[in-house]
Image (cartoon, rainbow, N blue to C red; front, side, top):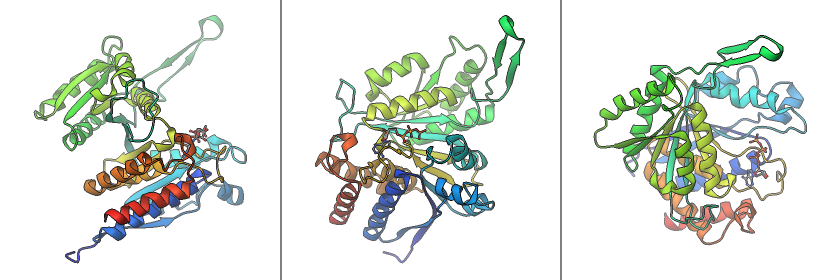
Length: 357
Ligand code: ATP
């Protein structure tokens, strides 16, 4: 090496249930990767905030937690929730949702990819590799509206908020991402049925697309798009969607991968004021927690998204190839049809990293 060492300071929040098992697994894998590639180091600082912490302190996190977390370059989260001892609305709002809101994590990004050695529920076995970029700060999930009248005349009014600022930054993010991938962006719209917001969304999309002449773009209505995710997911590269549409598409995305245990996600801060947060799609999985059989791939893939985020895309690609080599060799946890434990999968991936490096 040239003596330059880049160290990324990451706050690790293993959280509850399988979160603890898979975060330690992913940290091990990143450690192996850094050992092999001098010049790069991730320094993880762990914080024990979870439902057990709540039982002792009556709060999910200490009062200065957000200030503490803000000093890191990234937040690496496992899963939060243990409904047997703390109601989900208390644990999720006290930690996960608090971080998502206060750190202005305006983009949620979830890749969906056919993984070698893992069966997808799709009949068409052709491989796919897409990313859904979801606007995550406004849109349909707004608190504007209300309920009026009673009885037979009762009604609820729900307003969706689409600002130019948030719409444009989500769409721009999608085009930038496509530039590093397969140079194709699909916009999820519904301008044939939604009168104000979707034509506006389309307009902004067309404007931004003009700035990226080397990237192909198209729009699909959300209903057709959802069907295409099932019939021809190989037709997509980057998909950009509003909060609600993105919510639905990302779930279809992880479903077609074959197991929720392998799906990763990133919550991106675009203002640069706060760290981004990386977490797998799955929850704390109380039904299998403590048994040593949780699939660590979702969390390890989440670490890959963190590598990408810091511009270490080469390493990210290498890590994903090694994950697929391991699954193709049959070293898999039960959720994807194997018999291996979390520890065995982790060790397999680490030893393949060392062998390659
Ligand atoms: P929430 O998403 O609100 O936490 P939940 O607790 O039902 O809801 P998960 O914790 O994701 O959702 O669990 C859903 C199912 O997927 C469970 O049967 C669980 O065992 C399984 N599952 C989740 N994560 C993994 C994993 N990493 N490996 C294997 N199976 C998993």
